Amino acid sequence: MRITLKVTQGAAKGRTQLLRVPCVLTVGRTEQSDFSIPADASLSSLHFKLSCDQHGCRVVDLNSTNGTFVGGQRIESADVVSGDEVTAGESVFQIVMQQRRTKSFDASRLPESKTTASPDDSKPLAVETVLRQTHPVATPDSTRTPSTPRKSRGAAIEIISDHMQGRKSLLRPGQSLTVGRTDRSDFVISDPSMSAQHFSISSAGTGWQLKDLGSTAGTRVNGVAVSVTTLASGDTVQAGQTRFAVQLGGTAPIGRQAAPTGSYPFQEALEDADREVRRAALDAAALSGQPWLLDHCRNVAKNPTPDQFDTLYMLAVLGGPSERNVLVEVAGCETLGPSRLELLGSFGDPATVPILIKAMKSEDVRSAIAAATAFSKITGVSVESTNRATVPPADGDEADEFDQEFLDQVNLPDTAKAEHHWRGLESQFLAGRRYQGGVDVSQHVSPELLSQLDMQSRWEIALRDAFAGKRSVGKAAFEQMIPMN
Image 1 (cartoon, helix red, strand yellow):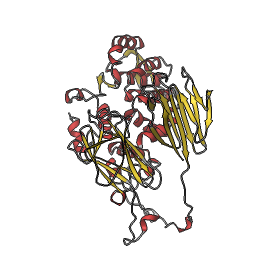
Image 2 (cartoon, one colour):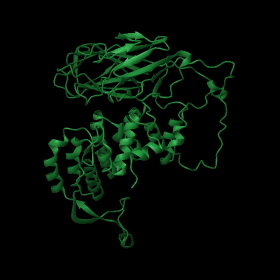
Image 3 (spheres, one colour):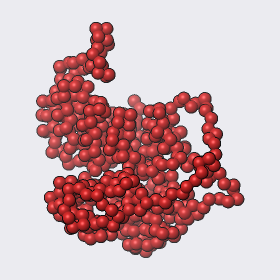
Image 4 (spheres, helix red, strand yellow):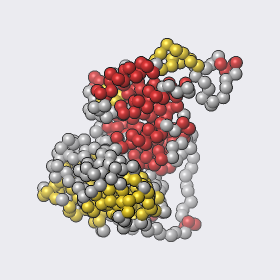
C-alpha cells in the first residue's frame, strides 16, 4: 500500500510526501521531525506521528502544545482512513491510501533455480563483489527472447555538470524522488547553491512530473524557470550550480534504487545467515548511495535485535538529526548488550553526551566502559580513572577459578572527570551537529584534522561522504583519504 500525505492548507500548502508501508513519519516544526514545516509557528517541534502498515494508518499526537485534530476532533491517537484530514497548528494534511494492484500467477510455472555452489561460497562477500551485483537478477520476465524486449517506463536523472558528473538516480513507475542539498532529500547533492529540498520528480499518470519545492534559486527546465512541469526524455534541469539530464520511457533503465524487495542481490545479502555478508551488503549500499538504505535501517531500529546490530550501526553513521530520538531509544535497549552505547559515539551528536555520562555510572562494567568509549569518541577526552575492575564473562555466567585467570582488567571511567570536562566543552560542542575526537565533522574536514582521528572515525566519514555523493570511495580513494602510517 502507498500512502500520500499532502498539505492542503497552511505555509507548506501543496507539499507532498509519498510513503510505502510499513512506515512511521513524524511531523513538526523543526528538523527533529521527518516532515518539518518551520514556517508554521503553531506546530510543536514534534507534533504528531503517522504510523502505517498493510492494515491501515494511525495518527498519534506527540504531546503537542496546540493539539492534533482528525475530522475536527482533538485526539491523542486515532485510526484514519483514506481521505481523512489532520489539522496541526495552522496546517491541514490529507491522507490518501492506495492499494497496490497485484497479479496472480501459477508458482509451478516459475523456472527451477539453477544456482550451484562454487568453491568460494563459504567466503564472506567483499564490498566490491556486492557493488558489482547492483543490477536486478533474472526473473521470469527477463527470460523473454531478444525479439520481444521488455520496454521500461522508468525514469533516470543524471548529473551532467562537472561537479559529481555521472552520478544518477533511477526510478520505477509509481516512485518519487526529492533532490536537494541536505539529507532531508532522497538524492543529496553537495551544492551550496541548492536548497535543502530543491525539487521533486514523481510519477504522474503515464508520465513524470517535476516540481520546484519552493527553492531559493529556482529550478529551470531547458533554461526556463518552472514551478511544475511534465518532463520529456532529453530535458535538462538546472538547480543551483548543478545540471541534470533526464531520460524517460524506453530509454531509461529499470531503477535499482527501490527498497530491497523482490529478487535483488541486496535483499538476498541483507537476509544472509552470515553476518559478514550482511555487513558487506550494508557497506556496499552506503558506498553506492542506495536511497532505500536509511529507510531500511530505520525500519530495523523500530524493533532492534542483536543480530541486526550492524544495521543499527549504519543508521548511527549515516543518520541525521531526525534519528537522534530513535538512537537514544536503541541505546537504552539493554538486550542489545553494552555495545549499544557505542552507537551514540558513531552518531556523534553532542546532545547525547549527558546520556553517556549517566551510563558511565552503571554497575555493569561493560556498559560503563562502552559509554566512556563513546564519550571519548565524541569529545576526544579520555576519562579513565586509576580504579581497575575485572570484566565479567560476556555470556553473563560466573567465572570459575580457572577462568578468572583469563578475564580482562580495565580502568573504570572517572565520571567526575567526564562531568567536569563536559561543563567546559558543552557550549562549544552544542554549536555543531556531529563530532568525532573533538572535531566537528558535520562540515568539510581538512586532511590535517582527518589525520588526527582514529581509523574507525575516518571510515565513517568516508561512508557518509560516499552516501551523499561527495566522493567516490573505492579502495584507492579510501587509501588517499586515510594516510597509512
